[in-house]
Length: 343
Image 1: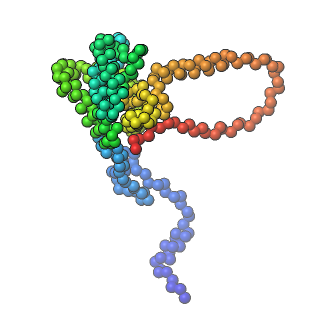
Image 2: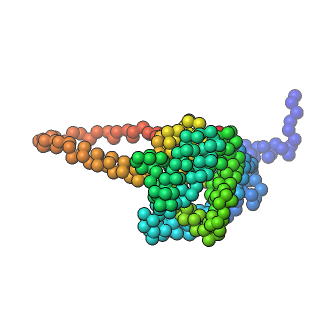
Image 3: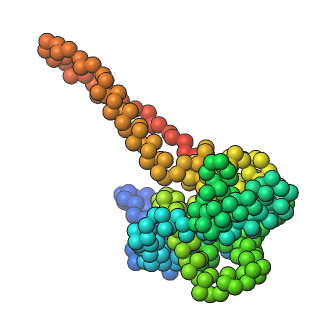
């Protein structure tokens, strides 16, 4: 005979069996003014904690992202308005003359970089550009060498490209005040490139009264030139990560072009860090060219609409019975090109 349950348990079990079923209590929720870290876990709640590891190419991601946020605020409040004011106040011929003058001063460094990469043809072309623009081009203010009969285009090069050409990796990604996006390799190359002329020539290139205005003008000119790229980056879901991927991919493409590989191998038309439009996988297209393309597309659509003959008027037909509503069209997935991070 089976043992009976204790007497004190039988009434309780009977009471539970006889009691009418009650609706389940709603799940406990936290007050809206608290966060998961402020209270212990609720009954039945599973708390999962962990940390997101920084990307291997950006070990200082947290510091860099804070620097990026601060610099974006400074750009909104100061740099952007000053760059826009510079563009409006200084006539375009004067701005182009200053840009050509600064580029011409850096041509000797570009030529040396090509020699270090064992590209004597491009090095001699760069020396030719420097000589032509320094004389016929009125001290480099007019880029005569790019036009006929010389046809010597401006090329960008430096020690960072030389190191990358010989297989030196970029190192950790950095986002620094007054520099912006860079890497350890690119920062080292930039410092050496900028010190080459003052150390080799001396005055006036090593004087603050000369170096500070030149660098300010160069920064404002670049800020205006890359304004469309900056705008697209800020509209990204994660602007900082997008900026990092675009910069690293752009630098990778520039190094690949020195080996005759990649999308820029036929010659780049934009200069660092955005060697091609953000999100584009084909040939570079400037903002002005993109606007022309959009205007041409709109004009073509309007022409097609006007060219369509008008349908002849028909006698009104009896209205058909109402048809069942058509099912919604299937979703259309559009693939957008993505800039891949540096391998």
